[in-house]
Length: 211
Image (cartoon, rainbow, N blue to C red):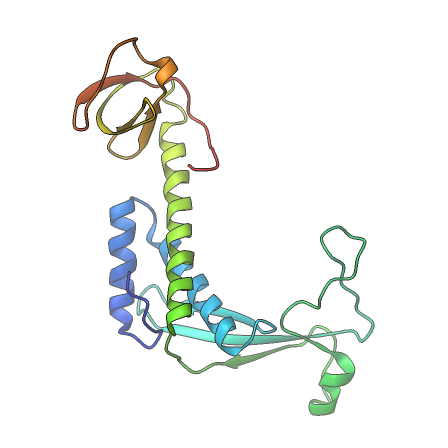
């Protein structure tokens, strides 16, 4: 996936999203959201993690908008960490009321300032980060799609192709997903080679850390 910079051809960005969605059988909107998040991370790396930066890609035109948001909060606002016991760092994109009033006499708690940021080119680190974000999001969506597709098919007999054999366990390509036939659940002394066509019984479908 090409993510050299957000000033790239807008239609090309949509074409990439459509191609990935088609290949992985997931919604294009999921891919667009992943690209938005990747660009957002790249922008925060460029402009500073203390900023609340949000990215929007128009799904019809491919127009990419990068905005920085600043929200006015009370001077005495306190933020807690996840454990609820220790103070946490202030979240990105806030400004204390007294500071905001120095530049804007109409500032009130809750007021939100928006600023459109200019396009920028991704550096090597930002490009790698973007790829990781998009790849991770696409894999997560693909796993969810596979789970939804197979979760109600326990007890069915399906056709598949042996994809690989790992430590005696056979990984089977089911077309729109993969299954694993564990060594202790296989017929004794039955061996398979990559490419073999086999019939399998769907014994269980569940989410695991690796998919």
